[in-house]
Length: 168
Image 1 (cartoon, rainbow, N blue to C red):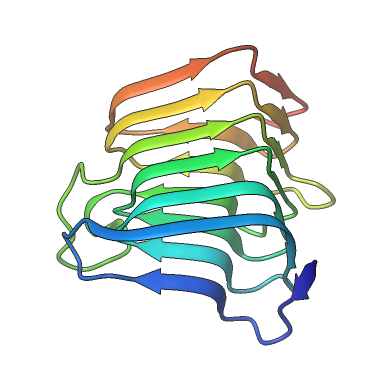
Image 2: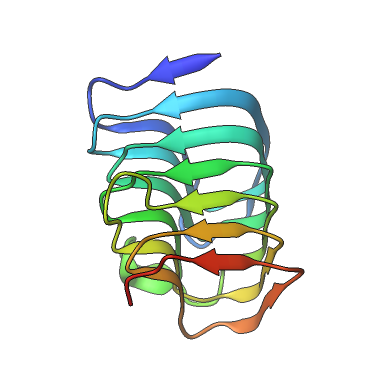
């Protein structure tokens, strides 16, 4: 299945009360989500229990935003051709006013292809912190910075991540 966003907003967006852990029990799988260089492909604000499996998301300003998200599994996915970043894990008030710090936690990204694609994507994954974020067995291609980690506790980059072709 293929979904194309021609409007440029947030194609899939889940919004829960700020500083909450709202159980959303979301599984998105086996789908392609295509943008037009603006907006966000998938965005969660304060949701818990989220899985993206075998999903393609490409050609948005930011392909995925996880803002105060908890217990997230991103598995066997492809993210590419983002204008600003492929994945942004926010922490605190970076994006949402009044958001507490260190709420984004238990986030695992594994066995994914994360690529600048045909663009010179500035940051492939921007992780602004939280607790227990792991990157396992991913293939990183291109971009200026492939993985930007700041102010978190319990980051792990393990299991044969292949990082190639970064500009910086």
